[in-house]
Image (cartoon, rainbow, N blue to C red):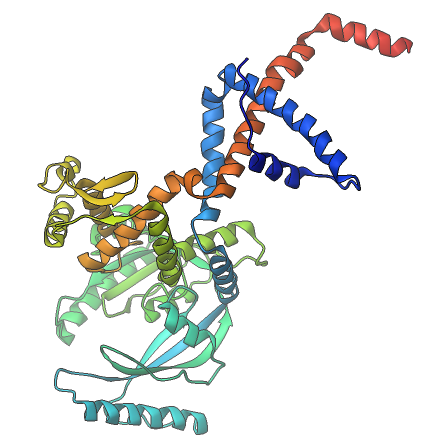
Length: 475
């Protein structure tokens, strides 16, 4: 047997993790040396038997790696804080009003100041008078009830820091000046499953055409009340192409997902099977049927609920700043290099083309940049085809794609590719991860070799067991 060496650092890690209380530290170390040496010899024997190459060992390793690697791919303190915050906010729905003054191409700095002052005066009026007059030029929008993840994070923070009747600070974006007012809050409503029949309004629909569509909706509603099957009617008449083929069924959703009028009608349905009368939104006339309802869990410690919030959090833009900082640190560690002479215009142009040919999987391998290196690491690289698939798949996924420009997608891809390379090679960059993985692999091998060579043999040794029991009985 060829003996393998063990580093001092590896031994001390194991000793400090497993040491017991002993006043004589020198004796404790010597005792552990014997135990650790015996353990390592058994592991070496398992490796020479090639136990580590078995399918089950490989599967156990992959599963364990996936479980723990996430702990090394984020700023855990930030993620934990945001997870707890999201869990707390998920318990309350907020009814918001939005007050705005809008910019145009002709808006001057002086005009912008006047808009700000008029909106500021309305804010002050709300403080002293619950029903102030909305002056000309100020728009008022009922946003309905919202909940966590319904709004961009900065706006969500404003909303959840308000008490009923209070207004948020003024904020500015490309469209104008705005502020929120919290009119009502309630315990979170949970999640619904509904099916709908939608009759769409044509562009620039006038009252006459809307009236014709309303009459059609009323006729369909009467057929439903007379016993017609909802799913069959949805397939026949609904103009919502995403849901019509599935009998009108919409994926499960919670507060703030859709138009406030739509959400209000959903909340009115008291039990499964209840049917709404036709109602209008900006999209057209809807008829909805409640299929199912899941109330909010009674406890924040509910594991499935915690997992759901965590998954939403990991996909939300509020973690972008944390991820960007983490990605920059990763890029330094992995030796990220920009490729000299890389033409980003070609990257963006061919990515658009890959998206247009999304139904042709080999297309990403057939373009002029497909085999060119677009990202370099110290010991690896990414080719154009990798970038093309990332851009295509991101744009195809409505949960991931939020209208980013190609330049933004490219920046995201550089961070994504770097973190994925870091993930695949974590052992080389993080000593704690490497130790944890090695400890698991060796422990798992030892368990299997002991099972094969000791426990299983003993349980199958009927003569030995009979003699042992006989000796035990006579002793």
